[in-house]
Amino acid sequence: MQNQWQIYALGSAFFAALTAILAKIGVMNVSSNMATFIRTIVICLFLGVWLAVRAEWVNPLALNAKNLIFLTLSGLTTGLSWLLYFRALQIGKASLVVSIDKLSLPLAVVLAVLILGEHLQTKQIFGVALMMIGAILVAFK
Image 1 (tube, one colour):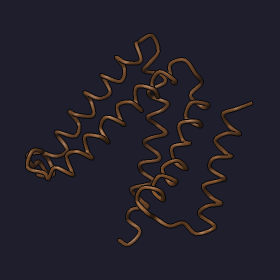
Image 2 (cartoon, rainbow, N blue to C red):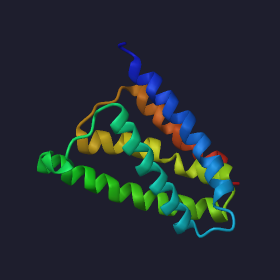
Image 3 (cartoon, rainbow, N blue to C red):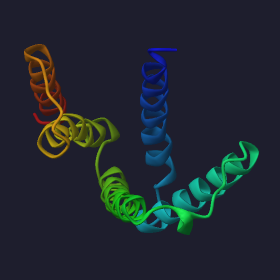
Image 4 (cartoon, helix red, strand yellow):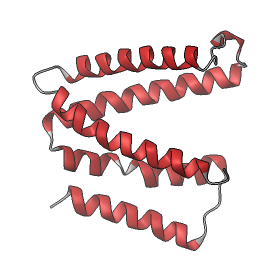
């Protein structure tokens, strides 16, 4: 149970990878903005059912203001990310687009250090550097 977060993280990585391939196929001959809209509707419906089945639904307005503000900001940045990602997938090769998109990994680590005050060990800093180098090597000729 102590490393359960790692299992969830691996599952997330698998489904994110599958998402890229399915999205690349799905965005052909469709506006990338419309594709993002359809994807978002599906996600909302799926999550609505998920919450109902797990009996986790609560009135969002009952959450405290800080939670609502940061979840709203997160939703807006997710939307912007998806709009840009789908457009990039539509006009670029999936293998190259996902490589650049995964620069979000080292960027998120840097932001976690700067904003959340998290600390990294030397080997973790080296790992972040390797992620950046790897993404750049795959994406650029």
